[in-house]
Image (tube, rainbow, N blue to C red):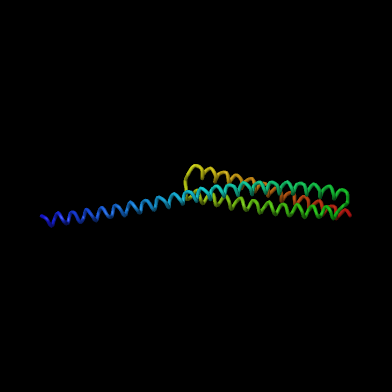
Length: 163
């Protein structure tokens, strides 16, 4: 009987030790999970900020392309062909910058989406949606900048033909 009681105590001690180890493991995992969630929240916020800034950059590039196209048209109408070609080149560069900004917004949106895949929280879902909207804005601005660039180049070509 004494042996049976000793065996039971040994098993109880082993179980108690195992429970303590499991608790310690849980605490470590919980701490790591908290750090990971915090990192993912930070990544999501950074990706959203990058997407918004890229969208703004694309929109500003569009404005530059529009102004360059206008300058090219005006210069071409007054037979200042070199200025028209320079404005067309400027519009092309603005369009390229706009495209790069759209690509950056897309990459940021992808990063936000990746963060959401790991962290299904309301704030991350909202940030991912906002990053996607910023990407849409950047892409639309880039497409319009390319159209303006083509218009500027066409104005310069027409001016060259008239001369």
